[in-house]
Length: 290
Ligand code: SAM
Image (cartoon, rainbow, N blue to C red):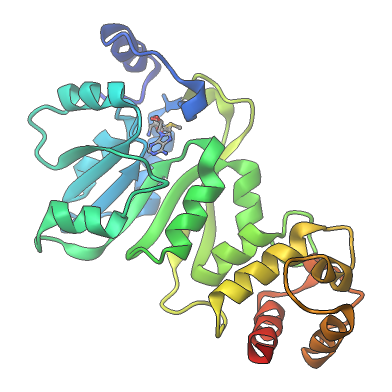
């Protein structure tokens, strides 16, 4: 079978199946095999492994994943594409196309249902993500603690930079902390808009997030930790003390001042200057007060 990820094949499939491209579903199909190869290389797949693909589209990446992995489970929300994918991959018994919403799916359950005990788990998740829901999908995959070992993702470049950002930079925020708390992120490659059809307006990047065996810092109550991080970045131009004082936590300003001092953090600092470790100390002191 010819490679799907070329301008010619993409056009042929779109015409043959009369596919309507939905911008609202973030449908930008990859049409350049070189970048598919980069994703595959970064995914480091083996024949005894399962890979879950989010948003297979017309199968450009799915096809290449199936050549390397034991089983590909591809979750797509566009019902029309489900029939197209089943037709394109008819007879390929290691590609399993599933209708579903990545924002609601229980990925562990999905993998258990589809595999029995025939593969080495945990699985990997690989995706050219729909840009409009990248952050919610990634945060959900991490916070729900699904049992994958790595995420290999194409995302908007700006989002990749936020995932990699260090304290004190403009890109550093709640997403940086969420990603780095659970994973080791690596930038694989920046990708130009020209390799998608239709072309997005922005640059993209391939990023690999390898799940840590244990989170980067010890946190007693993750809900407190993540609420604190969100509150601290809620009003970036304010001091930490003022941002926290205006958040939903039931603490008075003097109490916040004391918790910050007890945590070794100067209250006049801004949220974007705190390291992961400092957020953990602060969250643990806060959880301790309750
Ligand atoms: N993987 C294909 C490729 O690289 O050419 C398509 C990638 S396209 C950027 C994103 C895909 O995600 C589309 O096929 C879209 O329909 C699908 N999608 C959008 N929202 C989704 C959701 N909530 N759950 C699952 N798939 C979704």
